[in-house]
Image (cartoon, rainbow, N blue to C red; front, top):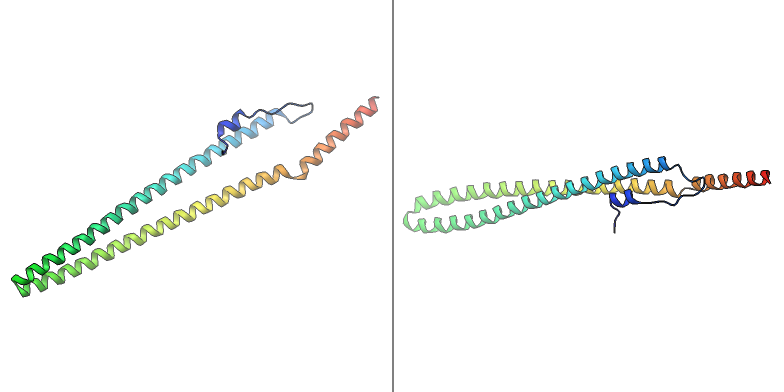
Length: 167
C-alpha cells in the first residue's frame, strides 16, 4: 500500500543519544509531505484529464456512428427519389456524397486530433512517471549512500575515543 502524506506526518522515529537533529528531520518530513501531496494532486488532475479525453473520444465515436447511420439513411432516401425523378436523384446523390465525404473527413480529422491528444497525454504521463521515478531514485540513492555510514562510524569512533580518554 503506498504511503500517504498522513503516514509520513505520523511517522515516529526512535530517539537515541546523539541522534539526528529533530528539527531538521521534522523540516525534511514537512517538505516530503508537501511534495508528496503535490504529486498526488498532479496525478489526480492527470487522471481527470484522461477521463475527460476518454469522454470526448466516446462522444466523437458516437457522433461518427450517428453520422454513418445518417449516411445510410441519406443513401436510402436518394434511391427512393431516383425512382421519382432521374435528374433530381442524381443531384441529390452527388450532394449526399459530397456531404458524406466532408462529414467523414471532418470525423476522421477530429478522430486523429483526439488520438494525437491522447498520445500527447500518454507521453506527458510517461514523462511525469519518469521524473517521479528519477526523483524517488535520487532520494533513495541519497539515503543509501555510504556517506551516512561514514558519518555514523566517525561519530561512534569519537564517542569511544572520548570515553577512553575520560577513563
